Image (cartoon, rainbow, N blue to C red):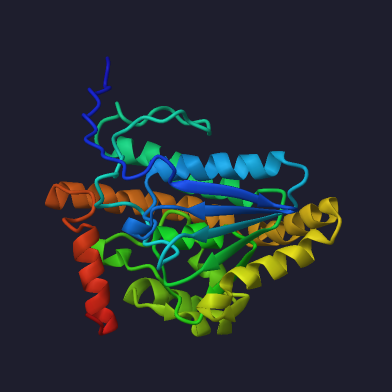
Length: 298
């Protein structure tokens, strides 16, 4: 019995062939998400380009620290759910031990794809053996949280905010589900269930952000922190990072994410059954409008 399906035709228009920029500066590698037109929404093109950039930095013995940032006004608006470059139905050469998703039927398609491009890639990047710093300005929303949370440090601008509003879609949070580890329990519930913006200062108060700076000081703050880190022994940094990550894992971080991943995809399947759309009929435009309305802005 063959239960595979004919892949859908992918109608994709990429606005750039360089969704991620890479620059080395002595011991520092700068990895820049480069889709400012769409507030650095993360499609697969960007995911694999990020993986290439991180691989390049890991393979360069001159690099001791990696900085992740976003070009333009915002760090990241999250997963790409509405640009011409949305490439859910496109095959890419896989980096992890998962099959191609495009010929899988029903809920299996998204379940397979997101094991690779979201949960799997984020776990892979969390284990990078060099310190990583996220520089966050403006919006860090939904999938953007995942990109910041895998980093060892987060430096945010005074106007930055963090938000996971996907409960509007009936989905219980993004795939790399670190909410309960980044925030205290009741605050994590507030963050997830209300889906409201958390200002940088409040995120700092709860320990999710290491440092807050003015927007024009963000690059310098990242460079200063990276320069300090680069002054320590390479192996010591790697072992220290592993030690802290291990504490999180002993507290159940990986197991919690595995459990949540199935809830996440049950929600996608339920949406598909009840509305005919995996996202419950919502798209980037409607989500952005709802977020602005909730925040009291126009």
